[in-house]
Length: 431
Length: 117
Image: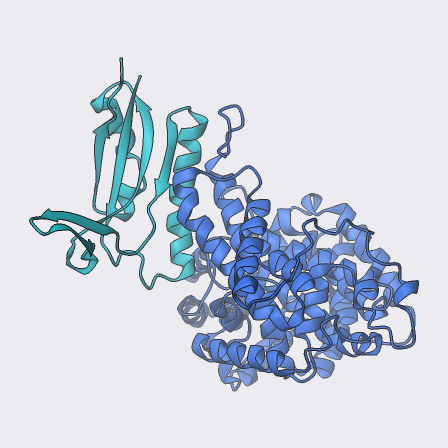
């Protein structure tokens, strides 16, 4: 089972693969099993995948990694599912082979009037599971949490960090959402109708957006970017934008936004894993291919008259992508878009970013006053970027003692270790 | 080259109630070590012993009595074993020193495996 000496795995690769398996493969495995067992057995699918991961964690330290870890987990999870079904006294046969890409029934076959279409309109198994979790009977925020948990393999703690909530509360809500999903008419095991897909699309897009956010700026841990998570979100957004029933401007806008953000990954971290701010980034390290992809999807997103937050955020990201360097950023244009975005979202987090842009545009006093007003949002008190933004603006205003206080408050919040280091460095400059 | 068994003991409750993240960190250390030694041709193999009590057989006048291992009363349980190649005990000890078990647990035992020739 173990590798031959000619094929050594570096320490880093092993760690990365294990992390990836526990986090990323989980969703893929659950999605695969749900597509075979039916959505009524979502809980069973999650349980057997969890059992398989525990079995891997127990035995791999002694046996080494199998040559195909994902395949190993899949086989173990599937056997565990068989065992459980047998105990239920059911004669269920799980298709042994994974369905080959493009091997699904053709869209026409499922396009009947009452077509339950799931297999045809949404082919990606994880995307399918995502649409399932975004059931309208479950509250919007719970849909988001459930999808992040089941499809994306996030822990309750990760999700709590994204939603600025307590871990225990998130755990309870996840349990409740799953109970609801189980109680819902299980005859629709093939998934929602094509109209339902349209209805659920905004939630699915929001989940992908949040998934990317978590990967782009993890709120704890050793890495500045959970690259797998962010790249998976980018891939899922692409799958939505290409889907027959889901090919809508909002999806293109999301792909554009995520492409622009992902294009900066290599420039955001230096060789020692330290965080590099946008203004200091070596722009030649930006991924041109992703930027081109961003602009292409942004053009497609202009079709129709729908304007979503993804359109506006993509426009902001495009502004950065188009600027030759930080000094030549078109801040006036940025501020106009930010203003629209603030009105549309009413989000205090958007407001923080708008304040930073305003400060850079040459109006740090105004930015500071707005940040002071934002302090009334209690949840921002434990949100590191709020205090960081306040610290930066105070530094611009030549108030180092006050800036230091803000950076200290930022250090009290959850943050990934590169961000903590960055904040300590900034704190040291406040003299 | 001789073969040595590393007997990895741990406290019965060592892995009880660990968060998955914390458990994952420990597992990463072990798997990375196993993979490194495998690549070097040092690692021979190993087995994890299943959690939970084993059975103890004792012979008495009345015959053979079978009991569950009294786990709760033991300071340490055998969690599993690994086998490595080394020239002698000294070399085996040097390799075992680098085993993550020495970071995450209190100690381990090395026994040379009897060779036929």
